[in-house]
Image 1 (cartoon, rainbow, N blue to C red):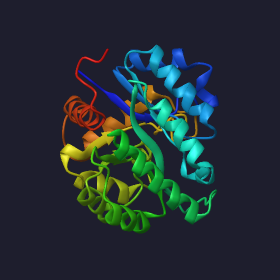
Image 2: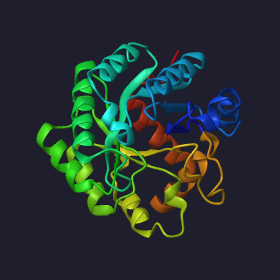
Image 3: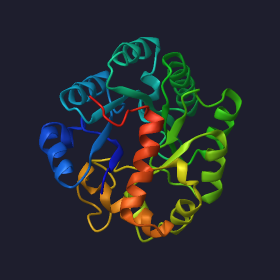
Image 4: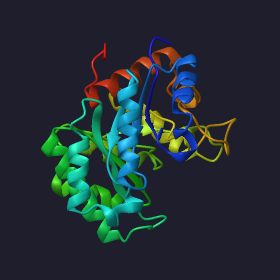
Length: 263
């Protein structure tokens, strides 16, 4: 494959952070040419470490934000800290923010307030937004339909909805990113959605260390395994994996405004 990008993982997660350099090297050996690593989970230190890892590696980029699980912590001081971190040239987006009405680790109103702050920050900085959405598609469409997607665009990461939900997000201007869930045996509705998303909105990711694809389901995930999701997406779309890799890589570069020869 000429280019293969993992558009969303968590290299600063405790399951990967101590071995981040080795994880990145294994991804490189597997043909992964670029990694986008997201902080967001836990405290601001996760975001700081994410940026540090990206700054050490030419083809690793960072996303900073507050996960919906921690939305109650997205106060003005935390947003200001994210704004400062986003000054790094390696930060390519704000997030992951959004809504998670499945786990509800933060109240719904706190999640909505955090999402709106992230959206405003993305617009202020001219960056796209990375969105987490679980069991909250209708509310997310309502909020973004009211406020609009950031001018730089955005992506629904680890999309888990059906074809109708995908069409709604595409109409709002979002890219759709598919994770290892696409390979799971019970993911029929998700696979149907993957067939329908316009070619220029497709992205792939691992969400590592979570959601390892088949046949590694239940094990620790790594960016190297994004190839399994890519192969399933290519199969569903009836194209060669190399062609799908080029499509998703081009879409990821365009959204995150990463030039062909990054330095």
